[in-house]
Image 1: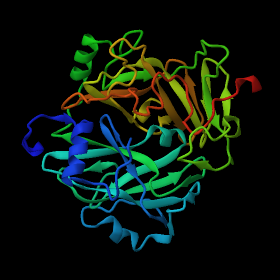
Image 2: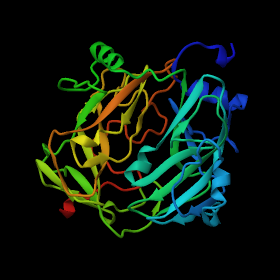
Image 3: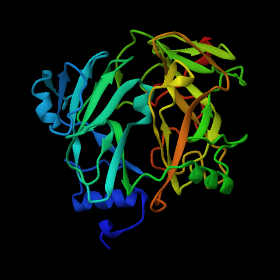
Image 4: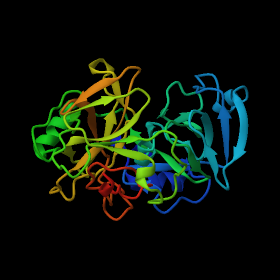
Length: 371
């Protein structure tokens, strides 16, 4: 059966994403990497050229990205051998992947987990787009990444993967009813009572129950260069300072923090989850990067202890006191059209299964003996 005749709705799993690539509905530009297709998403790769631009922009309903670039480009540089993206600058990079989506299928993009943990502000732009990270139904055309490192300058190259894209058949199905029904069937948090109101609430853990471990990390200013493709190559203490203070934390403006949720969450193989932007009216802070949670995250065949959500946090223009147990984000769950053959953590290079407070994969574990 042709996929466009399928009346099921929901997030499309890896099998359908692979079919889309075979059918030319996703055009990879060059052969896919072996692990590029995740259980319910596709990693997007940087192309050959990058453009330094004067400002962030959206093309709007009457223009392509390439057309808008003509008046905004400061300079162009090649990524084949690797190049530095400097903090405070805005870059546009055409991606290797382009789309020819069938009718009824749309897409949404998000920074990869490791991208968020490096404080790389990254968004995907499509031609004629009026919103970042959104690809409209039946879109045909190229994709671009907007990249603006905030804390660390980065080294990236053609093929580097900073963003991921998720495909949806039909309208979004996320709702509190779906979350409540799913939680009744199998608890979505390992301990405690789920707070479900506009999503599953996540609260910040500043209790420090493990006295030998920090409650978070604060990024150091003016650190070295991070190669986004090199795992465990950097000494964490050169880039981060641990936070030992318990109970509350003053968020300083323009500082970047890695914190963790109290809740150890589970995402069943039948569903995917996404952290949604949190209401700014409850405090002068934001969880800077919403993120995808693949099916199977923290689940481990239904008996998993869950995995805590790692949160990338910034204050707004003024210092703000964050208290232990304060709600800091919400997860929304959405069904897949079918259960993927492999889920998160099943030998597919999942870096953050069973995670607690954890820096990105680029850093060696923090040596706490330096306390």
